[in-house]
Length: 166
Image (cartoon, rainbow, N blue to C red; front, side, top):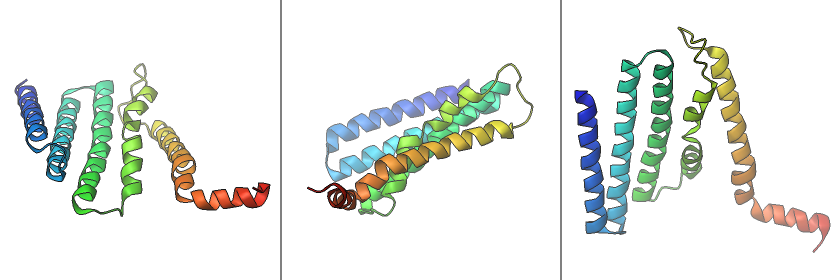
């Protein structure tokens, strides 16, 4: 119970600092950077709290808390890369940041595949394989419908004109 109180106090302090930073710095580049760092800190706090909850839980609860920790870890990586990209004007990993921000919640959704009636004592690799296949399907759909059209808009328009005329 003591660690729960510590996590709540730390989260509240970060939230108050976030509000203070927004009021004091506004939407300036420094304000945005401070805000992003505080959001990253809150995400790290959620990962730590989720892992602690998983350690205290049994069976199905442990798996769900681990999935929550994984989801927020993915979100944290996206937030860290985005913060770095905003601070140092790096456009090298924009596609990865977008992908992680779009799909950080997928591990939480995978909790639907966990069966509470026949809880295995070990990790169920068949369920993990199904989850990976579903995740790869969504990545392929994202790349096909969102990433490719934005990168090749001009070429697609040219191909349309060449095929169907003006």
